[in-house]
Length: 565
Image (cartoon, rainbow, N blue to C red):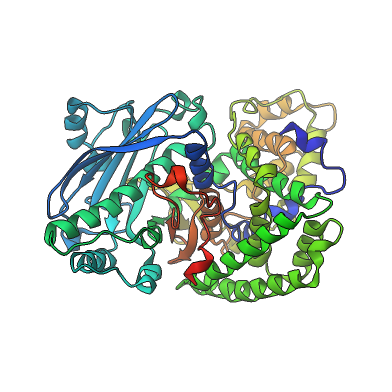
């Protein structure tokens, strides 16, 4: 991303102190740089092919299937196990022990021996073990009423009601997609040099994409098995309205704190893309037309977005009004003026809610794929590159860096109970991140280093009495407890978007803001918090299926098409 420093002379990237607050991060939307969209662009551009070499599923929907994706250099296969799960055993919780379907993404084409081994382990998930031939491990449960309703319709020879389909938007929800070495899977370091896996989370996105194909094939198969004389498949445009649901909890939240360099690169890519668009001197007729079209589609998306959580409900009310105002604003010929996209963005900052501002950021990127899509190549990270602490810098220098970047933390009273109310720890049973209440739970001995602001303020206070003649190495020799904090400060000095500039242990913390931010980079839609700590989303809704991808031209598939309204 070297061009970032020399190509933008008039419009600069938004400052970290504006972007890296949880309220704004928790208002991000999917965009062209989201990982699902990066994946499908690559699969289409490189002419990947897909097949289903095995589909041994009985009339009850139980059995095994294999879906293969063939790229220029390698083949990957999703191995799917479908189960007969009693209703009472079905749960969204990560602590569940049984699921309607379980999956693994296999590196290559599995042999009969591989499938036998996987059949003895993948259905057990954490209780089993996979190998370095497997890239991810996942599972999903049916949305029972929708699953049964669709089968009932199809076996009677009729299509499901589109409004009912859209009210849910998926037939199954995943409750985890594990990778990066978990439960015996291959380490990411072993595959990240592959071009198709260089951008973040591409293997996991491929797994979910193929999972979606399996789920839709499964309901059509079960309908046909139940009534072979009358059953019909789903009409293609209606079929695409089904995504893959997902339930995500606190386990995902600490990731963006624990990977500051990677997180910086995600945010920096998005901000750089926005800055490039804002710097354009004029808008072409095609760009204006495309923007108006995608805005109309985004308005439909907003109208269909539902949430049961009061915080998100309030944000949706604002977003509805924001979309109305954007639509009205572009009728004022603002797009015909000099630097139109910058003018539109600046107007939004002064006029719209944060939810609306960040929706506009995503929309501004849509007509400019030729300008921003290649930035996706900069979203991975070599996290070892800045791991070493530079002990030669002076204490005075590090003190100054802290005062510039973490001024908010220095202004926080860390003795006040409300500012240290929460405590992050790892559960014993599932080894998953959890959030406890410091005052009522004896968890101090298990606290994870996720309170960056508090720790930075403590190190800054510990600098008292250390004058300019001392270097950081001298200080850390006396205070080794601050090593992890010193490393983060040095990373943040070089990576402006590495840190969340908010208190992650206060009594007002909304972990769903952290979840929303990460899920927006995945490409998730219809963010629906079920509490302040877990959320339901939809993945790949409206996307072409593997058999459609080669001839599908709508690169804005994340938004509903205009003929759906």
